[in-house]
Image (cartoon, rainbow, N blue to C red; front, side, top):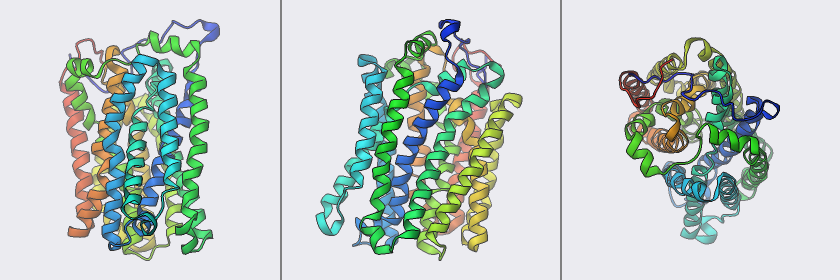
Length: 443
């Protein structure tokens, strides 16, 4: 029996909840979007600052390029810490419940982010400033590993079979919304403050805003997961944490394969946001505020592409969406990076095309991970695979792409992205041939 990545879940629509108290997919969707928006806002605020703030404030003793590269090392720290956070918080979930886990994780995420806005400059605290920011970045990564709440797979399970592709797309909307809000906020500060005021105090405000957003996200998610109806749904669909050791013993091959399924879209995420921002800031005369607003507009196009992808996946299947998306990323990787040296028109084309492709592919990537697992390990397996895929796909993308493009030219950054697309295509081919679990049911 082969395993395919499709829109149908191996778990039937739960009948454990009375009809009078049935939870609708729209109820879940609200909490999922708010949660994802807060998480990606936090991370993208740091990513923008790693290009336009931290090289000047934390690495003034280095040239701009080297300072940016070291800032990208800090970016990668959170992605390295995320799998460890998944292990830690899954254990906390098993012992004390999902509400406790989410409260601790989101409190750590919000506290780490707002504290970043208080970190002094290198001139004030020396190497201690760099050490403090690195420690807080690790805190962000650990916390993000604990924010997995099971709502995304539950959303697909509770939706009707002919709408599961669309509802599997909904959690990804928060990623582009959070990124767009961060970009607009920074654009406003850059365009209204002098360079001195921005680097002195203006850059801190987005980090403070992040804390407020996290508080809203915490209460929105707790309002959902702490209700009897949702607890019953989680239990009925076996969306409860299992031990990581047992998950790896039973579904180790699935975990290994799952890392590569969303690799292309996760790498693409930073290749159309953080990497081009660094290239534009370092090597062109493009206005920073304009670029950030273009990024927000591109995110809007990406949202439309996500909606289309979700609609289309219910008609042709998730497998085709992922394959077409990976081929589109491969084509983008071969030529599009050269547009970054093509002036304002080239930069605009790079962002708009990139975001459309990103939205189309990202819409189904995370749902594909959950669909690889059967009931027994879907919760823990999906969380751990997602953490590893983000680490390998996105964590080192800005650092690697900027290094390669500086050494060999922009085409080399495209080759880096191309490698991710190849990995995704190969993993999708393997997923169609190997029986990952004997109880899997093909569409």
